Length: 29
Image (cartoon, helix red, strand yellow):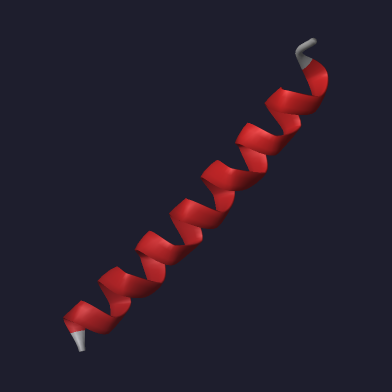
């Protein structure tokens, strides 16, 4: 089940990166 755990972690990191990118896109002109 290690692969499943890695996939979940990767998905969470991807979502966080998208959220940070969206926030930065709103803050910066």
